[in-house]
Image (cartoon, rainbow, N blue to C red; front, side, top):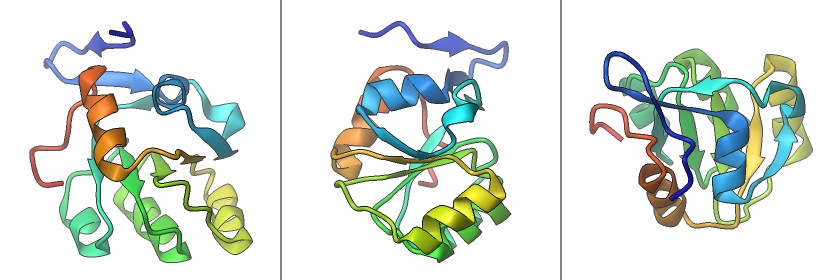
Length: 131
């Protein structure tokens, strides 16, 4: 197992963005200069209501939706980065919006299930079970 895991004193796992990129074999669309950003959890959702209702501050959001609404919702929720799954590429307007917000966007070919499992197996945990 990759030894990316670091345990905070509260027992919550954290991981840097470059570690998530490596684990998910992801391409970086926005945020090449933010690889040292610390992520404190992960969640997968395609319903924006689920994202808004979860504690998502400084977490990575995995989603199959590639619309501007995903980026806007992530920004409102305080998400630390977005990973688009299943190789789904966002439109240029979505990428530009994320760039404006300085919100990292990554792209992986893994499914939502596999991407979540790979992060979990490497120590990154979900957010209180709500995602």
